[in-house]
Each structure stands twice: as structure tokens, then as C-alpha cells.
Length: 289
Image (cartoon, rainbow, N blue to C red; front, side, top):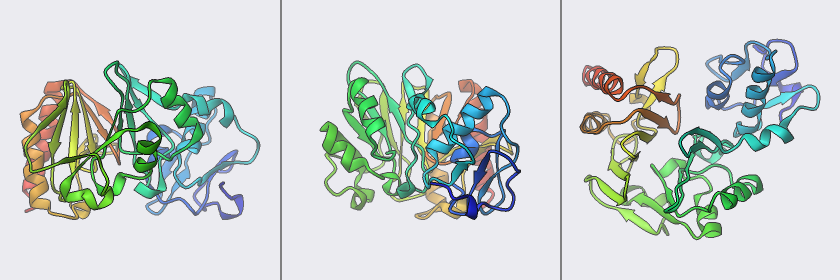
């Protein structure tokens, strides 16, 4: 729970505040960009929310915050807003919320489909999400994009008897995973689900392309909110930046409209627009080698 005695100095005076336990993961800025901003060390309340929609979004951010670093001076509507999660993005694709500090606040997603539901990376293991996932048909597969965003995947797998999917190069993070990917070739594990190895951030990093529309990108690719362009970062290419450039270029072989990252802003563009953005990113990346 956030502590007003630890609030960061940049906060605008008012009901909502951020305290110094913030790890600057960007979760709150994704959910409520009108309210929260980045100081370079932590998030802070830039503008106090005023409208019912702004207050709801700020409360969603409070709930999703992995470290409980957002608070209010008076009782808030968390018990009501709790039911916004999982939050539908589009056509049965959901953002789970309740980001986990075990994955440095990484986003996780849920796909609901009659043939069996998928969880992409892992949120906190919480009673609310367990009940929600149960009501939505459980979890058949848990796709783990890479080793540092697994969070509570093992607990979800045990509860729902799910099959975890991870690349062998990152298997140390989930040594008992039920399905292990090898090599760098595309794998279509179920109709409409393409797993594409993308080494770079880690050796075993993979992305998941669903219905040639939704690309779940882990820590490989995201939308830069301020620059308004696709982005990647050499500073977090822990395995190999040259490998990540090659992996990014291979994504030009696929069509998609959504970028749904573990860290960073999600974004929808038309498939042709997304391809142009991706081409521009690959070209920028090549100039850094």
C-alpha cells in the first residue's frame, strides 16, 4: 500500500499520489497517461484526475501497479474498478492488469477462444484473476515470451492444469515447462497461433502472432509514446543487439495490426502502416551497429 509519507516530490497536490517505492515500470502511464508522467526515476501525478473517466483510469493504474506505489488520500473506488480486469482490448483479447514486480511490472494478456484460452506471460497470482479466468473457461496454454517475465506462471499452470510454452534457451526460468520450443523456426502450435523465436533481448525470446493481427512482443518491440514510433532498446538487449536486429527484420515476413508488449505502450495501426513503422525501426537499428 502506498505511503503518503514517502510521496515523490514531483506529485501535483491532490487526491492521488505516487510514493518512492515506484520502480518506474510505465504501467500507470499506459493506463492513465493524462494523470501520470515519468520523472526519470519514478512516475508521479502530473495532473490530478477530474472527470469520472480520468478518475477510473487512475484507479485502474492504482490496482495494476506492481509495487502498490499509487495511493489516494481518501477511500477510493478500487472495489468497483477491480472488475474492469481483465480489460478487453479487442475481440476476445484482454490485458490482465495486476502487473507483477517479479517481471518488473511487465504486462500480461489473455486470449479467450472456444478451443482453449491462452495466457501470455503472467500477472500476479490473485483470487480475483483466478475467479475471472475460471468464469471465462480456464487457461489451456501459458505462452512465456522469455525468462524474466514468467512471474507466477507456475502457480497458474498448477491451478488450471495449463501447458506452459517457453524456448529451451530460457528454460532455466521454468524448468518444468510442459512444451519446450527449439531452434529459430516458426511454430504453429494451434490454428491461428504462430510462435516466432526472436533472440536478442534474451537468447530464448519469442513473440506470439495471433490470427495474423495481434503480435505479443514481450521485451522485443513496443510503441514509443512520446516519439510516436515503434521502438526497441539496445540497453536491454542482454543477449545480442545484432541478433535482435536480425530477429526484428524477420518480422517483416508477417502481417499484423497490434503490437502488445510486455513493457512499453501497446499500439494498433493498419497492417500496411505497421509494416512501414517496422521497416523504419529496422533501418534505425541497423545504423547502431
